Amino acid sequence: MAFHSMQHLGRREDIEGIFASVARHLAPGGRFVFDVFNPNPHCLVRDPEELLALAHYNGFSVAARYGDFRGTNTSTTAGRRRILV
Image 1 (cartoon, one colour):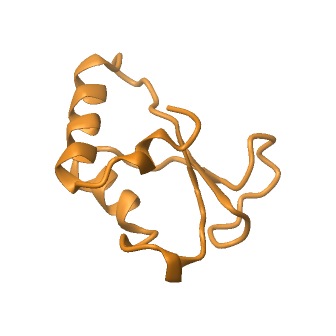
Image 2: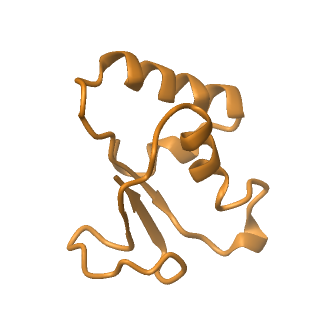
């Protein structure tokens, strides 16, 4: 899921709906990759770590975190993007 699409959803229930739909359609052993940006936390209502918690709560585990699509920035705090595998 690219281009920060998940961040356009305002309600936790909507995000959980995405996780549920992906889980139904994902092949066994498949991976769900989504892209979110890492804004200044003071500008957000939602805690930046909430997507990680929601993924875990809905049966997903995060295998890797990246700060860009080259995979060169694996820091959990640097950069404006979050790419989760």
